[in-house]
Every structure is written in C-alpha cells, then in structure tokens.
Length: 298
Image 1 (cartoon, rainbow, N blue to C red):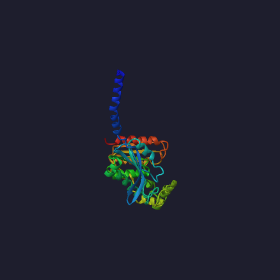
Image 2 (spheres, rainbow, N blue to C red):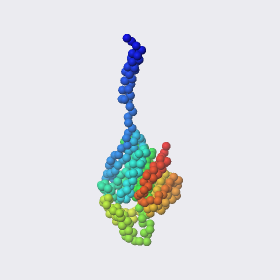
Image 3 (cartoon, helix red, strand yellow):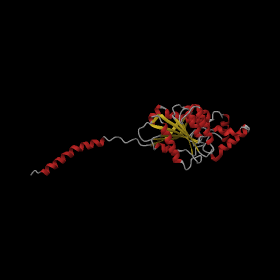
Image 4 (cartoon, rainbow, N blue to C red):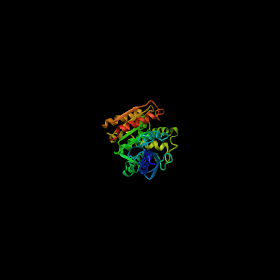
C-alpha cells in the first residue's frame, strides 16, 4: 500500500543519488594546498669555490620579497632568528657562509667576503633563480650584522637591484685604524691583529691569520671605509641600527655620509644592549620587518 511517507522516502533516496556524484566531483576538484614553507640547503658558487648555507623559503606560491642576510666576523651570531621571523611573515631569506669560514672551502679574506656577498645578491636577482625559488626581484633587501653590515653596504652599492639595506651595528673595517695614526704601520697592524684574534675569532676561519687580515685592512683602508660607499647607495632606504658596543659613532658617521650624498630615506634606531642585541632579539626582528615592509615598492 502506497503512503505519503513512502513518497517522502523515495524523494530523499533520489536526492541522495543526485547529490552523491556532485560530492565526489567536489572531492576531486579541491584546490591544491598552498605551498608550505621550506628550508633548502644551499651550495652557491663564488669565484671558484662553493658557499654553503640555507635558503628559508616562505609559504605560498610567491613571488616573495627576499632578504640576503650577512653574518659578521667570524659569525658566531648568525641572526637566523631574524630569518625565521621574516620567513613566517612571507619573506624568503638567504643566509650563507663566506669562503674560508665555518668549513666552507677557500681562503677567508675581507675582499673575498665582499665578493661572496655580491655573489649572493646576484644569485637572488638572477631571473632564472628568482623563478625557481619564488623571489620577487623588485623587492630584494640586504641585512648585515657587524662586519656583515659593511658587506651589506658594499653589496647594496654594487647592485642597483637592491631596494634597501639594514645595518645592525655595522663595522667599517678601516675605522679601527683611525686612532692609530701616530703609530708605525707595524705597530698599528699588530694592534689590529690582536683585536681580530680576540674571543677565538680566528678558529672558524681558514687560509689566513689575524696578522694577514689586519694588513689587508691597512693596505686597503680606502676600499674598506664604509663612508665611501654612501654615494653609490643613495638615495635608497637605509636602516641604521646601533647599540652600546662601541660602533654607534661609526654608524652615525655613515648616516651623515648618506645625508651628504643626498639620501633622505635614512631610519636610525638605538638600543641599550650589547653587540649581539641580547634580550632585544624579538624587538630587533620586528623593527627590521616593519622597516622592510614600509620601503617595499607596491
């Protein structure tokens, strides 16, 4: 006997069979998951040797703004927390070791470090590499700490594709000789060598000595004077970050050199902390991110 309840049941069953294929189709047509964040062990050529490091790649298809992060001398503090902070907020970050440092083949020298820094910047600006790693070549910055600050300034001066540079307690190598004019060359070099060798700085470095590095700076004082890079960097944005570590006056002089070169996009920030910004790491990362976001071309 046919009843209204049977009619209702038939409608429900019919509707289920109509819906089932659509549900199956919806399962097969799901949008692909967003590209996850990743870290790639990098081997990057530079003047016959291979630099070693890591490329932090942001989540999503990109292209992404990208930073080249340059560590100091010799690089016990690598600032990789800054890299992680930026990556979590949509940035790629390339962080490599210089030739002759931390097990990388070749001889360490300041000239080689300049060349290696240029090689890293050219790598991320290369169109083929940019496509492979999701780099937005119109939004590339360089960040450097201590000696890496000088290297970052040099790489920015040498590569017009860099849109801005952040200097964290940048060390201008030739500045160490500014107060030693009254001494002989041998005395000045010996004093600088002693300073370079302090705190086990030479242990991670190969193919050189503290005396050789001190002499390299002395014989190339003009080339290793950060103020001489100002004209090639201007008018691009520069973030100058200082601490109570004896370098603030050097960095203030660089800011003045930039102003003299016509750069009106200089941001300065000072923290009451040590050379490694101990206790201010999150604030440091946040400040660099906020500055970097503010200067990016839209």
